[in-house]
Amino acid sequence: MINARAKKKSLRVVLYIGLILIGLSFLFPFIWMLLSSFKSQAEVLAIPIKFFPTEWNFKSYITAWEWPTADFPRYYLNSIIVLICAVTGSTTLATLAGFGFAKYKFRGNNFFFIMLLATWMIPFQAVVVPLFLWVTKMGLNDRYLGLILPLMLNALGIFMMRQFMASIPDEIIESARIDGASEFRIYFNIALPMVKTPILSLMIIHGLAVWNNLLWPLVITSTDSMRTVPQGLALFTGLNVVLYPERLAASTTACIPILLLYIVLSRYFIRGMALSGIKG
Image (cartoon, rainbow, N blue to C red; front, top):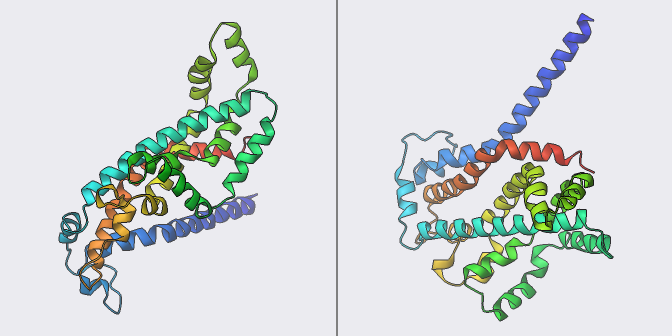
């Protein structure tokens, strides 16, 4: 009995050590980027590599923020506008479509749902040209609406919401209908509160994808005033030299908004991911 307990405790310690090492392996690139942003240009390129800066250089953040050819305050504003609108629109469409697929039985329900899932398998690069032509014909290129609309379409979100909406007991919805509740009220007052945790998880997942998206803003925008943060980072260069501390400083600050979003909603995200593994 004692040997079994000791063996179980040893396995738990080994498991925790393994998880800590895996966690550190994921954190290491971010920590390296953060520390390198406080180094000088010579220290970043120094061989042998120095993990900690000899002298802490805070000017790289000021220099990156005030760089003459990169308007980072404007890029952040654009990215935040696109993030809020795209995530809000995507979540609304996903919950509406998920509720419809889960709770309304109509001809072609499964067929349309399978076709929707099939679009999930098509890489964005394969549809970027026809999507660009469609947005251009609508006169939305180089505008916020042109940036936001394609990023609102999220097959993964509809799939997630459909799975969670299906777990809501039909008896609750039927009781609400008998009491005279409208379909919108059932959706808004009954369905949404019961899937709050998955909705917040979806917001984090889709928000990360929208914030880091580079290809679509690069295709649809042509003026500096409409650039987003990933574009600014991709085009951030010096004159005949790559300014590594400044680029790393800009990259570090670009991680802050989505990191804050995750910290605020992390417990809901973890619960949502745990629940997603047991939903049928």
